[in-house]
Amino acid sequence: MIDGKKIVAIIPARGGSKRIPGKNIKKLSGKPLIAWSIKAGLESKYVDDVIVSTDDLEIAKISVKYGADVPFTRPEYLSTDSATSIDVIHHAINSLKDSGRCYDYIILLQPTSPLRSALHVDKAVQLLLEKNASSITSVCELGHPVEWVFNKQSPPPGLCHPHLVA
Image (cartoon, rainbow, N blue to C red; front, side, top):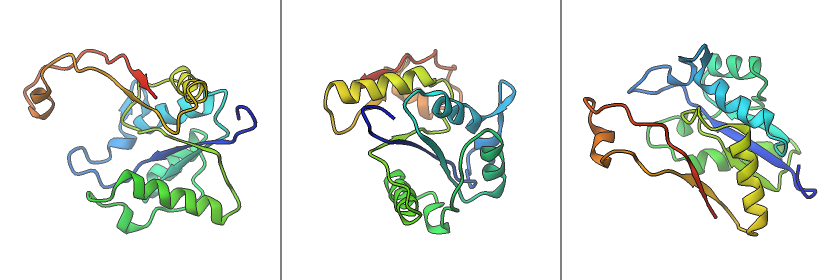
């Protein structure tokens, strides 16, 4: 909480990845990929609750093990390749409201951004309030041509240093 405002971090993690099956629970440096986002949310000094929106029982079990709350199961129609993040967030917020849980701010923590830390989350919240912005996002410059993103033979990119944009 900050300035009397409640904050929820929502982590969308469906089970049906086609390019990398089971990607959200694959190990990265000894922990499931999703655990890194859960950790960032839980260690933030401002985040009140860390919620995982998933359709997958294994992801739900691992999320709870690492300290996240999984208060609902995401419906099948929001677990397809064509489902949008905004629709998943709307579903999560409405499900939370239906159970009497309301928040002033929502933080989207993608499980595929494991290098983001609680410090990044806290700086984002501080910037949001400092700028009196309605939203912010973090972006980073690619260290290589954008075409490499779609090329399986591309060299691994360097670490991205995120920049916050309000």
